[in-house]
Amino acid sequence: MYFGHKIIHLVVLLTVLLFTHTTAASVRSEQIIERGELNVCYWPDYFAISYKNPRTGRLEGIDIDMARELAVSMGVKLTFVESSFSNLIENLANNACDIAMHGIGIRENRKPYMTFSTPYLVSGIYAVGVKDNQYIASWDDIDKHGHVVVVQQGTFMEPVIKRYIKNAQVTVVDSFKAREQEVLSGRADVFMADYPYGKRMTQLTSWAVLFKPKQPLAPTEYAYAVPKGELEWLAEVNAFLLTMKKTGKLAAFAEKNGLSEIVVND
Image (tube, one colour):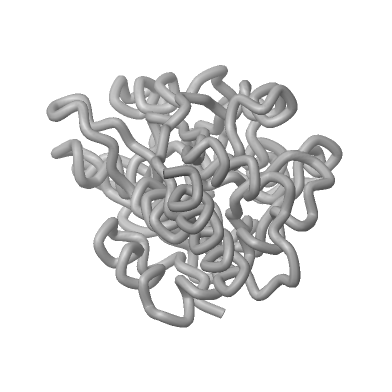
């Protein structure tokens, strides 16, 4: 039994080595294989990315699909660890998860605390309004006197929109739900969001409409995050991403989850 277990372990390890194109498995992947479990941090409120469907209780989204593929490629069990952007730094530092997979924007203020994979999605800023607003029918109608634009405090969108908007009034709110409330109440005309959240609004509500700028506004690359400085583990994750791109699986998952518009295939 012991000899058989060692043979299985060796086969799994060799599979990882071939998969990652590295000469030696990282300490992290060896630990994952040894315990037989990959721990993945996810944020349950990110529609089409890592979303816990309130009707079914099931996890769905492109990163849920990708996490499952990563675990299969390593021959281990997958465990999802509920997290959020506010807990991301702590969860990577204390090893609550081996990798965070929930559409993490590559931002300078995060780089001291984590290491990013190559990007797999890129989204600029979109606007969400109501279908029956007779004054706004396209992105070009937004920045006009008398219109009100909502943006969430502390997001990368806040400083961008404050610089970008010249004529409309910009209102800052403290939560993503407050953005919707401002528009639904009529106190604002549109709120700013990324593409996945905008898609959520149009698919899950009867009132929302998504406005896209003619040229991408402040495009942000999305990646996976691993604990700071674990470069060998990062190389394995990047090799996984490359394989998913080359085989077309990333594109297929993007299409399945309505994200083909923002997928990065190269």
